[in-house]
Amino acid sequence: MKVWSFTLKKLKENKRIVLLVVIDNTGSSPGRKGFKMAVSEDGHLKGSIGGGIMEQKLVEEARKMISSGEEQIIISQQEHHPDVLKDNSGMICSGSQTIALFPIPVSLMGEIEGIVLYLSGNASGLIKYSASGISLMKNLKQNERYQNRILSDEEWELSEQTGMSDKLYIFGAGHVSLALSRICAILDFHIELYDDRKDLSTFHENEWVQKKQIIDYDDISRIVQDGSNCFAVIVSFSHQGDETILGQLLGKSFKYLGMMGSKAKVKKIKAALLARGFTEEQLSSVHAPIGISINSQTPEEIAISIAAQMISVRNP
Image 1: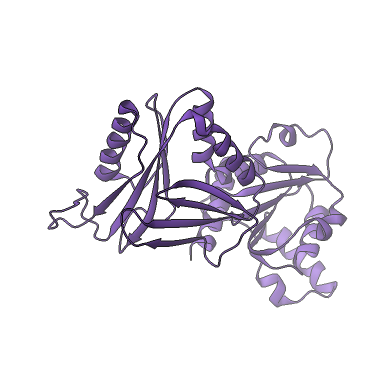
Image 2 (image 1 turned 90 degrees about the vertical axis):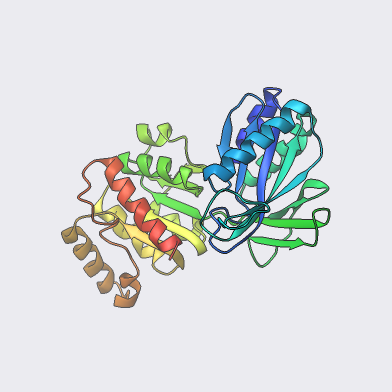
């Protein structure tokens, strides 16, 4: 999403863009299918296709395309083996990757804006990359996030499933929530924020979430959808709020469910929920106390510990 938003911003500034997209990879390639990078006419960059000397060379190639007015989509094969002569990337990590370089003139601003608007809603569809260009196909689904078909430099295609961004529900809009939202926005989570307090400054200051709402915590089970790409973090203001929220989330399926609190507080809430009929098995799925142990003290440190634990679950 960040690369698309950057691309749209630069087009609105009347700057040409070259979009680099990894359309295939093998072995220990640092760049994987779907990795993207935008190179702007004014020299600014966003994203990555794997880093290192390979990325530096392809950024220079993109800049040459911009300065020459090149409109042809080109393919670059990069071999990450020191003993390979043809298409040597200059890297030694083994594997290979194929990158498509798409010139994006200002005239395509409307198409790019449509993609950004569609992605901002986390809607399901396919973005198709091919020798013919980039197109958005709404309301379509495929089994994997990225599927490709490469027959030659002239006949190839990569399909990217949209609407598969990991969704993060944060309950509680205090200082830890604010810091966590900022961190998880960088990690490309689609974030929804909920609190039951009105006129909370940290709620209004939070500009990193896609949705925020003041609700009655008793309504959570109706509002929240679960799924294998859904994460939930409870950092509410009160012990009672935590128990109310957790009680409604335990019956749902999440990739990650965590609750902030001391060991004593967590023990008390778990005992109360057991008394209400919840099982030890259900409660064992909750990361509580939340986060990895790094002796965190500040809201930012606590948020980092939570994000690190979420990443460990996200990338087992």
